[in-house]
Amino acid sequence: MEENKKKLGFNIIKKSDPMDGHKGFGKGALSLDNVSPVFIDIEAGEAEIDIGAMHARSAVEKGIKFLPNKEEVPNGKPYWLVWVTIDRNEEGPYYAGVTACYMTVDREIRRGYKSLPEHVNRMDKSLKRHIIIDVMDDPSKKVLADFLRAHNEVLWENSSEELKKGLLGE
Image (cartoon, rainbow, N blue to C red; front, top):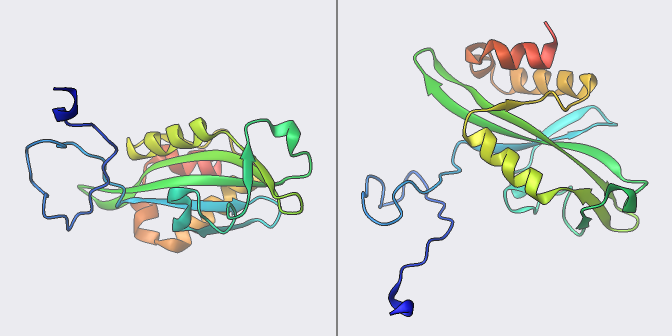
């Protein structure tokens, strides 16, 4: 009897999936089509999208063993991983969820620090249209604001005042 039970798992369904509109088992599965990971190199003041972060395989993360204790990576280079979710409302598409997570990487010793539960929870919060950027330093907020605006001006203009004020301090 136990072997006949359907197991619930984490399903990622693409929009072109033939089950689109399916109302049976697995209904309500999570779609990651509209979320993108943006890395901010804090020291360089640069931002870039790296889809590899969806599975912890970004250029920043490759070849690094991550530890849950920040003190074990004292010389780590600091980064923000920002989960950005796009949605559409009456005005059009906009940046709906933006959440930041801190991490460090020391390439020399091939070790890094990140809180995996925090990264997973922040991705989930972004998907649920939350804005969590107050943890970021001001220069990184400006880098992110400039990046989001340059990436797509329409998305930026349609975004909430909460996001704009949070990033620009206006």
